[in-house]
Image (tube, rainbow, N blue to C red; front, side, top):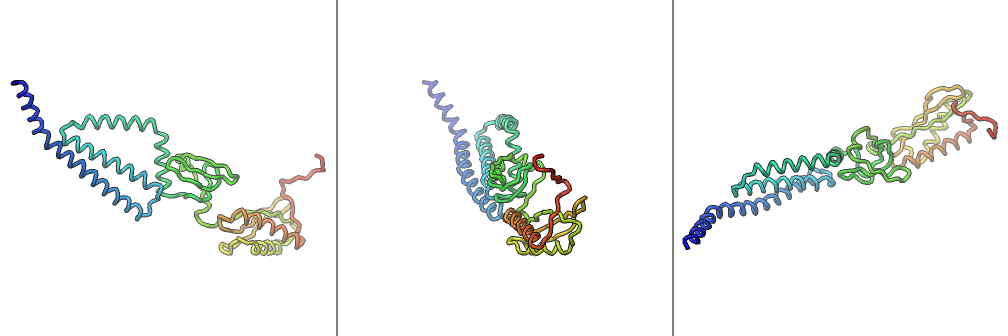
Length: 272
């Protein structure tokens, strides 16, 4: 009987000792989750108002939410009187192990965050990346997906995407087309130049500003190499490229201008 009374006394003493701590921990847990919810709502609104890329917002919010919840958990455990140093050591060891296992993925993740923050390119841009040229179809947190000009889907890890030069043909909004025509020495350059300028002027999609230009690029053994520079909107590049070539050829033929061969071209008898 006395033993039962001793157990009851001890149990009552434990309740008296831990009940306030448990109640306080429960209140802190409830208030803490409510506060985290309010903080995350405020942070979400701030991100939207700041114009932060919508693709990165969920990732940043999830990281912040996880950190706040971990801090809350440590606070609750500390109120209950549990030693938190062992939890910290275990958490640090687990974090190190996960970091080593996901080293490559974490590098791609960090690179993806940088791409979404600094925006060297965006979805829909015409870019050249890691010797691949095409249109950006997706910017994922790990990879960038490009559709090349010949219709092939290329997936490039983000760590590779930022490890080198990035050519963004869309950023400025216009693009120069680089063409060459080989003019015989006996032809008049001012006359040929005017014919080509008129042909470019009559080509839909060629911009007035920057103005198209025709100049002498160099001289070779058999001809004068002319540099022809029309400008167009980036999205119209290939349409204008083919159209302006066709118009220049027609204009030169109409005016009796003979186009020379490049020095590198050698024509031999048929059958060789």
